Amino acid sequence: MLAAVADRLKTAESVTDLRFCHDELVRELRRCLVLEHIEQLAEEVAGVHEAMLHRVFFLAEQETVKRSVGIRPPVWCWYVMGSIGRREPTVWTDQDHGILFTCAREEEPACYEFIRHAAAIGTKMLHEVGYPYCSGYVMATNRRWAQSTSDWERQLSSYLDGGWPNDLRFLYIAMDMRPLYGDAELAEAGRRTLFAEIADRPPLLARMGEHVQFPPVPLGWFGNVQATRWGPHSGAIHMKQSGYVQITNALKWLACLARVPAVTTLERQRALKEAGILPAALSTDVQEALSVYYSIRLKYSTEAEDGRDYVLWQTLNRTEQKQLKQAMRTAKRLQRFVARRVVGMHE
Image (cartoon, rainbow, N blue to C red; front, side, top):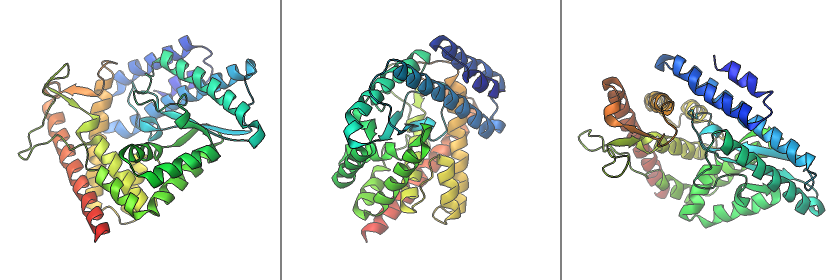
């Protein structure tokens, strides 16, 4: 099925080859998209994206070495975040990635030169292949997300000690760090440290729990779905903001509370259930809700690149509408569950 696309990516040598594979993913997915097989499809779609990014990062490194730019760090890692970091991307996903490296202090300027050049090549190549630039600039071309481990630790400390809204947003983004190319332990250690540092700061953890309550799930008191009212997406539901983001952030927060540095949403959900943090019934409902959000996002993402996060409510069949409403109710329940835990921290 999709494994053949991932295999072809291993020998791709150009942007044209890579773009062909990305388009082939769409064609193959349309033939096999069935809700009952959604977990298997999620794994395969994530696998194709990972093979694509891995190849791009490899080619970017080779091109930078070929041009003799700076010094390649002896230890470095290109990591991913966002939906790819959590292994739940749809077909058209934007870029969320960064780089960590370590080297001798006297070589650091030259290593930064190498990293920045490789990042510029890789980011541009991904854009040409079909991965839009991140609107929030969460990419390795942003110094914030491409640093030596010593600079990263200093920056992380400023976020942990600051606690401003933007600091909280960056911390939530960084929780999805997952290594994809290079020395995996750099990103793994960075994520473990992040979870532990947040857990050791109850006031910060409480503020991050309050952050989980936003944005509100667009479901009214009487079960009416509150679609976008104005603009080009009038009558549509933003699939990420309709409960999906609220669930993923709530599980990140609970994972910090429980000191479970898992990286994917499903790993967090299962670990929290096993640890007794998430009640069994709520855990089951959360898992079902995630499947609904992912299946609908995946299905409709094959139809257009633009506005891919929006789906017209009337476009959904009656079963999908019913499933999505239930998923939204679950997202609101999980938000309330986190809110109660936060209140308990203040008592």
